Image (cartoon, rainbow, N blue to C red; front, side, top):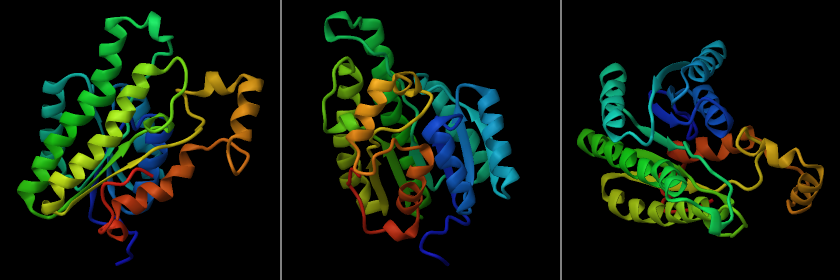
Length: 244
């Protein structure tokens, strides 16, 4: 078996309806995994599943709100019932509200933290417990951000959540390592997604962004697929606790 094959594995991808999640879901499907596409919007999930199946892969959709822990527990149980296992968790679901620090409301703070950190934390907990109980090992891949280690204006709450994801990744790697679960984070730079397209539509902003990147172009969700598949596959069995 190829070091990069995901054949026989079940991968849960959150935020799979669009952007990075959609791109990685399709990539994992192409690598042989059965992909469980999760998000809040059913129509987008159905499109993602259809794309994976059209390419010859296997996929199913399950609606899940990362801020609803009870629904999350039910969703994980449903996936295990339908697929028998979860081997790979790709924690991609996230949100942002751009505001100067002095304008941030408690409601917006709680909303961002609930999805980006709390939801990720407890979904990882539930999936990790399932993997530990199975005893077959597994992979958790968290999506951080450029702001995991770098500060930008008007995204202070998002930055706090993604900085925490970077450190949480290391803590998870230490605790889950004895159970043969590798945990790593991908921290994308300037990626064109539905979350960022309005910002990059500004010509001045886009030129600035492209000049900050060694390859002189903005990234796409497809640019993350290789790294995601590597971290989900046997090729990375001795890689853990890293923020890439």
